[in-house]
Amino acid sequence: MEYKCSVCGKHIKDDLMVYIHHTEKHIADQIHADHPDWTEKGGLCRKCVEYYRNEIKGKTSGEG
Image (cartoon, rainbow, N blue to C red; front, side, top):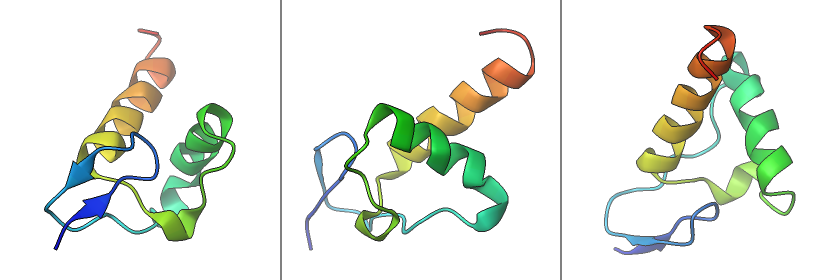
């Protein structure tokens, strides 16, 4: 089955990742800042999850 990532808009054949656990709320907050129409129920692709995890890591480690 093909899905459309609600963040990047790409069509993917893998499963979408449903909302990130509450322990990663900071990632959801950043996604909302960049994509105000995004909803947790819409999910997102693995690439977008990894992108935002890396963005947060960069900011917290002082690299960003």
